[in-house]
Length: 404
Image (cartoon, rainbow, N blue to C red; front, side, top):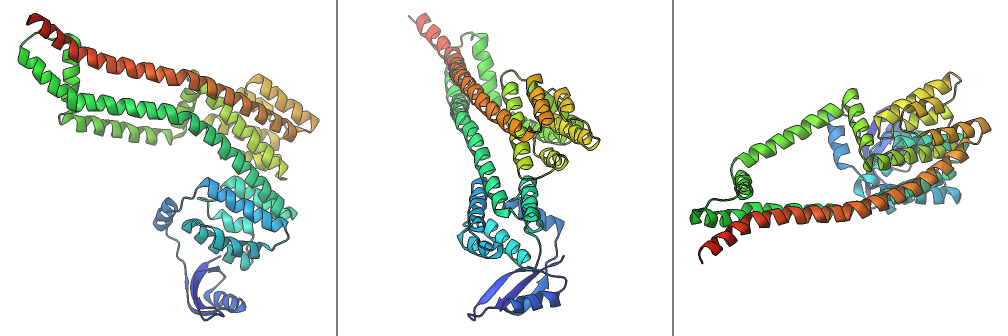
């Protein structure tokens, strides 16, 4: 249905702007008058692909703000407030200007008779497919408030898990950054001055010192721009390759095969899969529809293909555990638990138990990796800086000794 931008005079004699969905400009004006507005200008919004892309680029909103919006909306709906009235209140409370504009447009579309799910479906930068699917079920079953409460709890749990990972990665990232800055400063500003003094002595320099001088010269010459261009080119090539099916599969297989990190990544993929599937099944979605939604949010092409195969088996009347087990992402014990839950009719409960166990296990793996990675980075920093110091000061010491 077309959308129209309008400028109207409200009952307080103030100018009001917004958008409305209607079959025609005449219908839009009629609808605005029914809301007590006197339209002065109504024109259809022409959706342009390039404009939409730019809009989406700048309309990103934080997940925390979306979760807060969802929680407040659920609270008001569960308290008996109408959806349109709740959205009216939230248009005044939302602080992010892009999200506020989206909520205003969603409210206008709901007022014109569109479903809430259809209205939010066009704002994928704010509301993903999981959100939209659960809202649609809530509207159909008359439990929209409960569905939104479930979504808010699900989003908050996901954010806590992501925050744990970010917290663990901050310290190693800071160490690596400091190490790179120190090395660059030494190689670009300190080493050239010291090497000038070493060359002036006329002595034969060790191979390590000569290598260091060559690297320093490379970084301070025009070749550094060639190196940077080469790195940028490789990054762009990598991004282009991983957009293909074979490239994405190769990337995901490589990541899962990495020692230590691969095991953690596999657990996170499984935890995301089980928790999301359990939440969708609990909201009332069918197994086939839940698998279709989950396949789009796993973040791993191997798991995505396995879920799609499981969905095809479900549609043909077979089980879902076999393709998941054959993917190599799910270990046999978890696949067996899925089978037991499927046969007993308690699949949702079993998935929740698996998700909780995987979350606890992931926390343990993260703590162990953090305990290993942090001292390892410190040791590597010490080795690199030690080599630089050794390569520069040993020749100076040797020269000082020969002068006595």
